[in-house]
Length: 118
Image 1 (cartoon, helix red, strand yellow):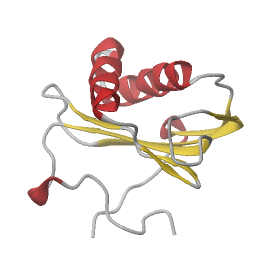
Image 2 (spheres, one colour):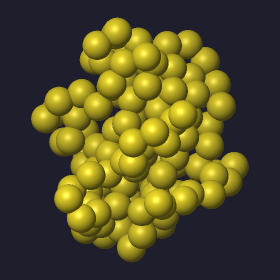
Image 3 (cartoon, helix red, strand yellow):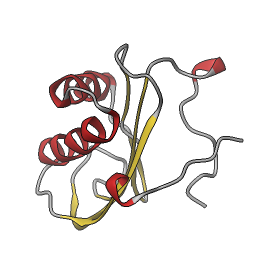
Image 4 (cartoon, one colour):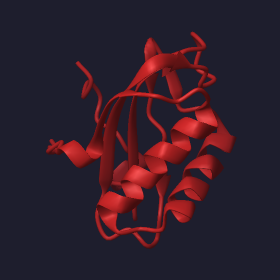
């Protein structure tokens, strides 16, 4: 099992975002600052992944993620939103988001372990 330590620079509580684009921009900036990456490259990679299909999974949760060759280690952020944002999920509203950016996906290509949000 993989563990993660959430420090204040990777947690955003009641983030003020009014759209999916604005939310992804804010989270990309946070991820880039935490990992020493270019925020435009992080945002571009996440948007490219979102174009394949929304990572909103329902029940107010989304798991946007991307693979970045420039990443030297995985970066994970956790955010809650001040007001729900339409993220293209089955229930149309997002309240909590976990974002992940890393160089290579783990074996089997799965980014997230089941049940991490339990």
